[in-house]
Length: 102
Image (cartoon, rainbow, N blue to C red; front, side):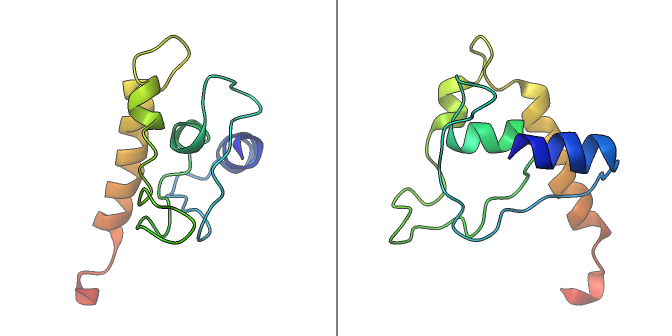
């Protein structure tokens, strides 16, 4: 949800960490951005990791619905900066974890 993840969590509360979906997030069109759906909407809303991310009875595509590639570079589609922001959040989380956990 863009309103919760971006407007509240990121903008109002200034959270700069990684955001992960609950398990088996439902795929859906974006109410705020009609040209986006599913993973493209998730990235726009600043949700960085989709869980569980593998094929299930609910998701036959293993978390890859094609919506990122479909909208990347299109008018009002996902921009390179949005993908970089998501990657940066995940990498910062990985680098901040305790190496003893490995």
